[in-house]
Image 1: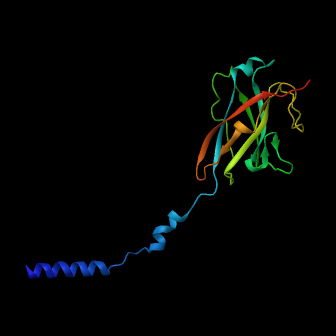
Image 2: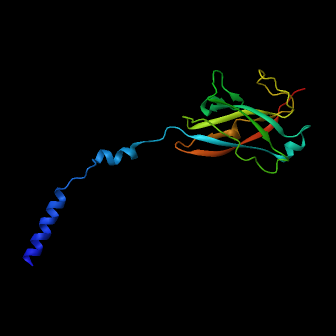
Image 3: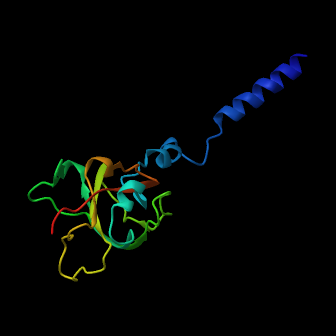
Length: 168
């Protein structure tokens, strides 16, 4: 019995003296990495009642920008705000009964909240240098199009067209 106890203590002492080939710093290195960017997968939607008030189909080229949400007010980008990314993609909303599938992914974004602002050139008359919508083009509004960027992930979001651009 004494011999078994001695042998057990000897094994325990020997095992406690063995060192791992990785240090504690190596074990925690991967857990110390924190993602500092994320991206958005964007789909589009518009209220069917708004679509029925349009003179043309709710389809065309979406032209817009992604802004740091801190640089966007209730009426749009603040003076001096710079777009983080410009988006241009074909969108077909059909009768508006459902949102589109994911049509575009943003670049990696390093701010916690962004706002997507733009318009749908539903009549196909946008000049390549003209960045403004014309009368009755669907446009986005800041409030419903502000999204959280979850760092380390790609998050699916829906950009909503809120009004038809007023004008002649």
